[in-house]
Amino acid sequence: MVAETIVKIRELTKIYAQGEIQVTALDHITLDIAAGEFLALMGPSGSGKSTLLHIIAGVDRPTSGECLVQGVDVTKLNETQLADWRNQNVGFIFQTFNLIPVLTAAENVELPLLLTQLDRRQRRQQVEMALEVVGLGDRAKHLPRQLSGGQEQRVAIARALVTDPKLIVADEPTGNLDSHSAQEVLTALQSLRRDAGKTIIMVTHDPKAAAFGTRQIHLEKGELSA
Image (cartoon, rainbow, N blue to C red; front, side):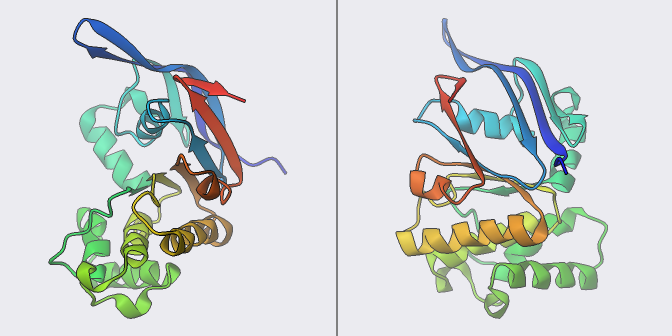
């Protein structure tokens, strides 16, 4: 059985202007990502991997080319449509956890749900489920400062999946973690793919982190390399 393609990229190009100079971040990238993949995007700093991730997630726009996610060409959406689409379809995990220090783990996870039509009871159920998935059901009332780095990042993963998106994008999610905490986070991502059927696209420069994925691709100077 052939897996459905969740991301279809064709001739994607991104050029930044830096004063008089034009910098090509992505150079005619063509790529298919299957539903249920855990794809590791690798490459040195400045290779274009984060730019590619941000375009797939609807955070950045290409100069030209197509980027279809679940059949929707995100490059054609206006800002309002894009914001709605992101909230419904993509979960974000960053290198910095971006947790709000005065909110509990549960309150941090709940934040994306405040933009939905769910009532308080439904939101609480979703939050409890998301924290259980990442193994932090017993830490719901803890503040970020009461958690380890690995636990903070797992709270961020719970926040990314609480709206039940099909696609989760992670930009260097283990970059600020020690090896034990990194292992915790990568194992949690693996189980999301295996047990919940999520598609995960992770930017990393760490071969050990990339080895947790089901496929690795490399970018060099804005081009895909073997």
